Amino acid sequence: MNIESSIKFHSLPVDAPLRITSPFGQRDTGIPGATTYHSGIDLGRDIYKPETRILAVAPGTVAESYWNDYRGWVSVIQHRDYRTLSQHMKYKGLSAGTKVETGQVIGIMGNSSDPDKLKVAVHLHFELQFGGVPIDPEPYLKNVQEEEYDLTETEVRAIVRDELERLEIFTNGGSRPSDWAAGFWKWGTENGITDGSNPRGLCTREQTVTMLKKLYDLIGSESAVE
Ligand SMILES: [Zn+2]
Image 1: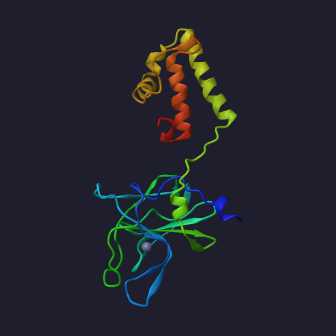
Image 2: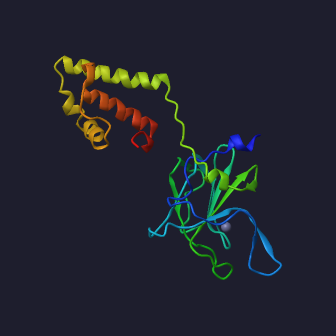
Image 3: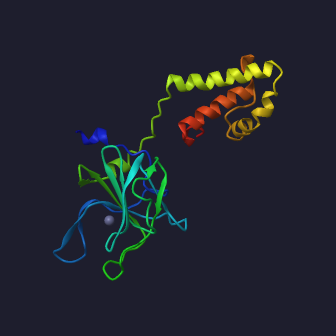
């Protein structure tokens, strides 16, 4: 299987600017003559926030959640063809079997470990494993790609049909669109989705914004607004 095409991150693993404090691979420990192999990379915390959150880089399922004296609280997430591992988390992570979405908070950055064995500063040790082998995550962290979402024709048709039914109710003496669509209208205007105009008058502006809101919810991403 081709590694390049199998691994895609849709989110950074931290809600902080990307700051790599220690790269992957051989590194100098500061002890003369000794080097160690770093099986992941270390990411720094956001210095402007009291806590830095650890995020899922893609959809997946929590495969392991455990304590290790050297690694502290560890969380391993199984993505489609690869795994990501976070260690030194402040608290125990989500239970094994929990499904996670892209960008979901899976833990808080910490410095957990048994201090008699290893003392570390607050940071995230992040690993990427493909076929059980750790590989360098840096290229993927620098190439985070927005998730693609393919709406099916059936999903779009269902939304439009729903709105046409509402129009039917309205024209047959039902409640005015502005009443039932108040929440949608508020969302649309607050997020700059609509300028309030109703070009061509084929559907009401409330219906238009309602359809957009439903599509937005279906996509489940803030990217539709940004
Ligand atoms: Zn590390």
